[in-house]
Image 1 (cartoon, helix red, strand yellow):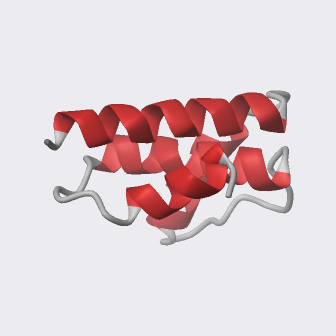
Image 2 (cartoon, one colour):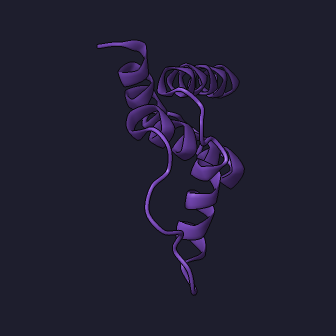
Length: 84
């Protein structure tokens, strides 16, 4: 298991739920690290959560997946350290 996969597992074991801003950052880094640049159309209408997720991911456009994976791992490690 590489560090990105380990961080995906570790984030599920956090004792305290991160803030919505941090959750969006985790989501965006995960998507960029696993799928690359955002694709498809931005959800509209009353899908506020979907729109926020899309926007957060779109902000990382152009970032290499490896960089996003590394940032994801670092963020999870920071969250783990804060929760102990």
